[in-house]
Every structure is written in C-alpha cells, then in structure tokens.
Length: 471
Ligand code: GLC
Image (cartoon, rainbow, N blue to C red; front, side, top):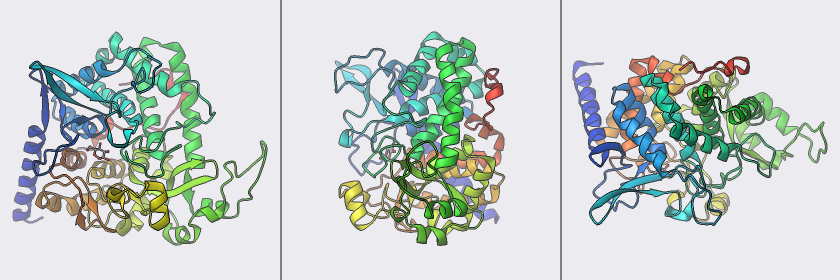
C-alpha cells in the first residue's frame, strides 16, 4: 500500500474507534452497552437500544482492548433483566429469556433499564438468539479475563442454567435442533425461516459448547449430561442433513419419496422439484459446498445464509473439510456472495411469488434489499474469523480492502442493496454500530489471529468434554 493510502486507512480506523466510543450507553454512570445506531437524520425507533446480538462484536473489541468493565457491566445488567419465574400467562417473557434489546429509561428522574423481549418489536418477533449470544459473550469475557470465578458466581450459574433449561426443555419434537418461529435471529422479520433455521442451530451449538465449559466446575449434573448428549447429535444432524455439495445434490436429485420407517434414506421426504437443482448444479464449484438454510418436513431451504455458515466454521460445527468447502464456495462465487460489499446476508433473494408468500409482501424486504439478500458489513468480521480459522487470510484481506473506504465514505450504513451490494440500503441507518465494530474487529483479527480464540471452538471431543474447563 502507498504511504498516502496508509494514512487514509489509519484515519478511517481512528474515526471508527471514536464512533464506537460515542456509541457507548451509560447507566448510573457506568458503561453498559452500545446503541444500535447513532443516525440523527432518521427517527430512532428502537435503534437507540443496545441489542444483545449487535453488542457481540462491540464486546469482543472491548475485550481485545482490555476494556473489561463495559462487558462485565453489560453481562451483569442484562442478567438482571432475565425473568426468574414462570408466570404461565401469555404476553409476558418466559423464565430464562434474555431480551432482544434494552435502553436506559427514566421515571421520576430515576434511571432504569427498559427491556424488549419482542413484546414491543415490529411484528412481535421472538428473540431466540439473544440468550445464545449472551452465553457466547460471557464465555469470551471469561476467556479474555481468565476470571472463571466471574461465571461461577451463583447468579451467573443460575442464569446459564435457566437458558439451558429453555433450550433443552421437554418439547413436542425429537430433533436435536431447536424449533423456532420466523424472524427469531438477526433476520427478525418474516422471511420463510421458521422451523430449524441454520443461524439459530449454529448459535445454539456454540452456546452449548460455551455453557459446557462455564458450567463444568459447578457440576450442575443434569444440565451437563443434557448438553453432553445433545452436542454430538446436533453436530451430526447438521453435518449430514444440512450439507449441500455436488455429491449431495446428486443424491438429493435422485431421492425417492414417500419412504416410511427406519431405513428411509430421504428422511425428510424432500422432493427434488422443490429445490432449484439446475441452478445449483451450475453454481456449486467442484470442491465447494455449504450448509442449507433450513431443513424440515419436505423442506430443504437451499439459500446460502452467511452468518450461519461462517459461524459454523468458527465454532467447528462444520467439519474441517466442510469448512474448507464453504470457503471454496465463497471464493468461487465471490461476485454473488461478496460483490462490492462483504457480504450478502443470504443468497439468492426471494423474488416474485416466493417474495410475496414468504415475506408477506414486506416492502422493506423486497428482492435484493435488507434481509432479503442485502449486503451487511457486520458480516465482515465473521468472514475474517472464518478465513483465519481455515488459513484463508487472503480472502479476508481482500474483503476488508473492498469495504473500508466505502464504509467511511458512506458513513457506516447498516446494509447495502442490489445484487452486488452497490447501493446504500433503502432504509439503512447511518453510523450503525455493528457496521463500525464489524470493520474494526475484522482489522484486529487480521492483525492478531490469537484473538480468534475468544469466540472460536476446536473440533468437539466428547471424550474430553467432561474435563473441559480449559478456559
Ligand atoms: C436490524 C437487524 C437486526 C439488528 C437491528 C439493530 O433490524 O435485522 O438483526 O439487531 O437492526 O441493529
């Protein structure tokens, strides 16, 4: 890089750090989180809240910089928002839930934290991912500070246990995956992702891995046994039933339907005509593959969802071979998946009748916009982490180069639109915090791959899980 360019990039980073500092929320004079966006040109709606999922990259950055207090305060305050009792009446958050977001509010000039468990959210969507992200952030905090005692405090053990109880609860179905309603994660609008969406399954897996290490020393027997049983089943299920590559596509294409009983090969009764096999056969490179967006009864959602696939690499939910294949696919289909802004939230977009049926004619999610295949700069850090984990640093460097000047010039938008991400998102907020932190975290991960340890896991080894606690 030329000297002049280096100075520009340096200034971009300096501005980003400053913006992150300005995004910090204070409660009773203590820093407790970061706002979702600081765009004064648009109505705040709930963008003045601290979202749990949005805070994850902020938390990792604060931990990297030794600003442990913010993350500790965040964990303590959000834990206090977790309901401890089951009220058994509808419209109240269930025991164990962590809110989607919170903000500082006032009554009689007294500050308090107002939480939103989805009861205020547009379309009243359920934030299933919050409690999973909360455990992942707690795990990262313990890794960074080496203060396991923090997580061993009774209220934290209780908090983790309540989340685990929610996830491992007795329920109707027998699948190792989590059954959730539409819009239960980063995509929190209707987009045909009800059932067993990949993002939730991967976060579930990662949270189980994290909880396993945080609970171990306290010896919460029943939950630990539950986690140990669930982890390998969940891993096998995803690696087998969600995987799509040329070989698997061939098998699916020739699947027989209507198989009953134990010996069924096409267990979910997938009909080849329901998947775009001709397009996929062209799109899939020889050594590439990915995890499907969703698998359920006669359903195989073949859309590529970035967060789920990248986090599957980071958490080792995908096997080593699968992880390499996912990166091969991203490299081979760079124009589609990364284009002019890393990277697409999902690909391809739902169009025409599918768009109308699955989104409910949502004007915010028109094809190639927002959740419906828009480009989200926050995904840059997931891409960088996955690239580091698979030894594909060059891919991450190229992605960062594409993003940095543009993000700065466009004032850090929330998302981009268009098939290649060429347009600033139609309703995108500017100064979106996780756009800023996604960029900064990607930079930090490139500089020091050791930071990856804060959020990544090695291949699950059931044998040694019981001696875990290797934080
Ligand atoms: C968007 C995203 C959601 C995020 C929120 C706040 O609506 O879909 O995942 O948490 O904005 O940034």
